[in-house]
Length: 330
Ligand SMILES: NC(=O)c1ccc[n+]([C@@H]2O[C@H](COP(=O)([O-])OP(=O)(O)OC[C@H]3O[C@@H](n4cnc5c(N)ncnc54)[C@H](O)[C@@H]3O)[C@@H](O)[C@H]2O)c1
Ligand SMILES: O=c1ccn([C@@H]2O[C@H](COP(=O)(O)OP(=O)(O)O[C@H]3O[C@H](CO)[C@H](O)[C@H](O)[C@H]3O)[C@@H](O)[C@H]2O)c(=O)[nH]1
Image (cartoon, rainbow, N blue to C red; front, top):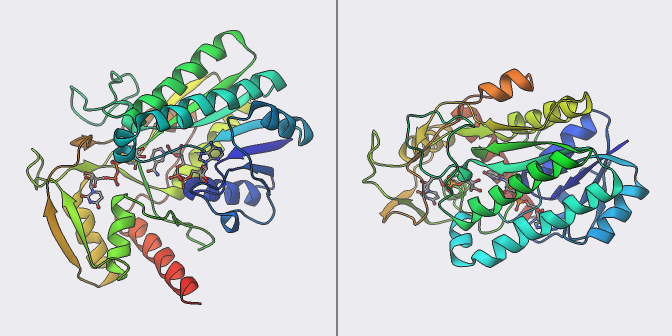
């Protein structure tokens, strides 16, 4: 039995592959290497460069490698980019996912774990943390493109011998504590990535988008989850599905929100470096506050987060930035 990891050469997927290899699973990665890197894939896994939207190619890979389960990370991930080019997001996150799901159903793969996102909620009416029963009103084509894939999985699971877990990630950050992989994305727009790059001198300065929000210091609030804990939730979801668990949607976050300014303080504290931060206007599509209620993941999947500490997340991200800097300088 082999686990197929789509997007396994990317940031989160490369951590997933290491976790599966550590658990002695056989792993095949399908990645078109648009934002990922072949070197990020653990050498024990087999990397096949292909597009998940190519149903025939994926079906062939599933049969050749006796794939019993798919963990689907491949996609396009930037909220601002999705606002600028919505059709590209529907193509890659919805249409190409359709090609993959069709291959899974045609070949009889029963277990499917999907990377969804807190962006499906948009701005909630009620108090935080957000539960899975909150209305889904995405504020960007990115969020909508992911929600459409969730809907497709739910409808397929009604009529096919096929069950899925859609994990709605909040803000994923940090790097493998063993230093084997981290976020290497070029031109990343994520807060902790940008802040750690700035602290390490890779950028001259960074911007804070919006300082007039109705929050405790005027900047947006996010729930940052360590990538190692996120990947552990996928391992738990895989075990749950293999034991016959029913299809499920579950949030992944810690239930604690930090403001953008608090994150920057953490980066200064952990790195011991000050860096230039400029105030900039609000970024279109940003949600004010996004914090998870993850009771369902804890109860249904027996998920137990172990790295719930902002400074630990930042510290691992800084260590990875330092590794990248040394690698680039030979
Ligand atoms: N990073 C976050 O904070 C976050 C939050 C919520 C959800 N997610 C979701 O997690 C998943 C992984 O995100 P990431 O941060 O690791 O991004 P990433 O860009 O590092 O990884 C995506 C990988 O998928 C590959 N890929 C993209 N389209 C493909 C296609 N059509 N066929 C084959 N390979 C393809 C890329 O080459 C890359 O290796 C995405 O689906 C994203 O929407 C991420
Ligand atoms: O240079 C920067 C980068 C970000 N921010 C701010 O930091 C907060 C977090 O922004 P990110 O871009 O790090 O994350 P988002 O919350 O916009 O989105 C992330 O989490 C979402 C889920 O909540 C999606 O899944 C998405 O893929 C992922 O990037 C926002 O208020 C943003 O305006 C800045 O001020 N300056």
